[in-house]
Amino acid sequence: MNFNPFLQNLPTYLPGRPIEEVAREMKIPASSIIKLASNENPLGPSPKALAALRQVLPQIHLYPDGQAYFFKHKLADSLGIEVNQLILGNGSNELIEFAAHALLSPGSEVVVSQYCFAIYPIVAKMFGAGVVTVPARNYGHDLQAMLEAITPQTRIVFVANPNNPTGTMALREELIRFVNEVPQNVLVVLDEAYIEFLDDPVDFTGLIRLGTCPNVMLMRTFSKIHGLAGLRVGYGMGPAPLIAAFEKIRQPFNLNLPAQVAAAAALEDVEHVQKTRINNFQGLEYLSAGFRRLGLEYVPSHANFIMVKVGRGQFIFEAMQRRGVIVRPMGGYLLPEWIRVSVGLPQENERCLAALHESLKS
Ligand SMILES: *Cc1c(COP(=O)(O)O)cnc(C)c1O
Image 1 (cartoon, helix red, strand yellow):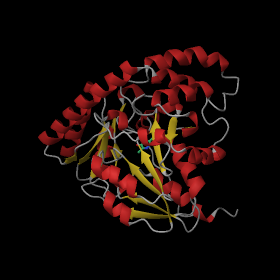
Image 2 (cartoon, protein in one colour; image 1 turned 90 degrees about the vertical axis):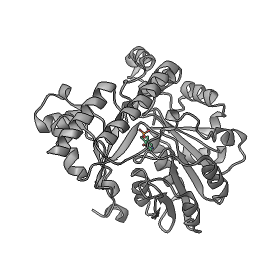
Image 3 (cartoon, helix red, strand yellow; image 1 turned 90 degrees about the horizontal axis):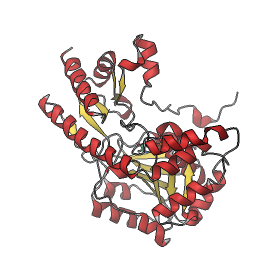
Image 4 (tube, helix red, strand yellow; image 1 turned 120 degrees about the horizontal axis):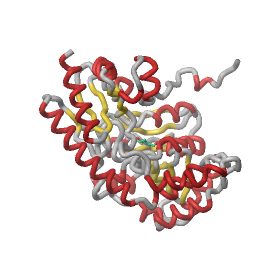
């Protein structure tokens, strides 16, 4: 077979390990395992979404509405933007791929930060583009250096704010200046997967609403705060011409029927979002305090996970897994001394700290 040459050195994305897989491998019941590895919502899905799902299940023999009319209008209204400034994705991961599809080819480049979300470089390489990685500053983005790394070949600059896996947040003024100073022929992807966890985020939706900025795309997801990771719903907001280009790439039924219905219901579940935020703030406090007690360095987090330096990251990950706690080793991000822990329920966080403590002694 003559495989696409870009596939030759393409790394595979390593997701957090599913509970079932770990249970099978270790021959222990799935019910005895907790997963704090993929930044999922520990409170589960929105109850409103669950109720809506039950109603729609008898209709899954029908194709979904390829335009997702109802959900899309509802989402656009809630964001205060036009439907032609909005695109839906099978998770926001699909939107990242749309951006690459629309803009990248061999000879072009993307600019990312060291310790960026692993999908950006993978997708760029899939389209034969070069990846320019700018050294991080205190584990976060060095936005000025990223600006300076832009060349005539640059097509996309990716910034996740807060960043995954480090949990860092860009300074308001620096981020605004950055967005204004990136040349208008280079797309700025602002990945806001964790924005709902912030108290006072920089709100770029006004920029989208005005429609005057040709090169900024905001990406968000229902996987994190809304607790619908298993359904795969993400969305992008951007100028209408950019959205129209992305629409050409989109598969007609990329958002399945249960996903459309559940996400529409989750959008109204303000209570679930609020409970999730409160659990998260308390969980971050609890975990940070625990790390301090254990004498471990951590990166103060603005998201729903926290990165902590444990020495032998892979070893601790495996030792914690034997104790039924799945976290994320960071070797793939070239941070072999670190693990990333998603915030869980209070009892899960407690179990996580206990497993970490025992693993460090082992
Ligand atoms: C989790 C995450 C996403 C969202 O992924 P989905 O495909 O919507 O589940 C996007 N970007 C970052 C940085 C993330 O951490």
